[in-house]
Length: 113
Length: 114
Image (tube, rainbow over all chains, first blue to last red; front, side, top):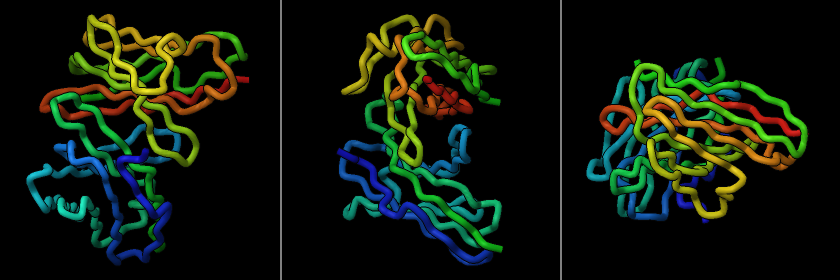
């Protein structure tokens, strides 16, 4: 069973506009949610995270929103830049100091100049 | 800081042979490391948790006798794919837990079994 889901495999936006990537989860036993950016044949790079007790975290052009009642989170990138084109993974950290992450399937973002 | 390396970056081996992949935390100590596998256009799937000085904890469905994990020091964990088969061909990624519980990922190893 897929505990973390990214239902949109791809997203295409115009440079300067907002990119919104979505993620849903089914398990309540997560204490942190994270977003990673990944290029082919490379390891994921951490972007931004949010504690399960918060509903928003902002870092520059990146903002993550968490809706616990809906078990939904989203990553907003504004303004989008061509260099943002990559695969974005949503991940949920299992509670209990295990450090274990459960990843979504990823969304490929293409930002067109 | 907080760099994780993997060696080799790419490896091709024949079916039936064993392959060892190394994961090193270069500038920090990691008592816990994680091994993931990613098939093309799919998610990163957690295979096992590697703990320094103790046995690894494997996720459901991962064969511990096939994927041998050794975490002999605070900066090195190894994953050995034994008796590799073409279906083991994948992208293997490790991560190391550093200060503040932050996970740092390695660049990955592309394994191709012919």
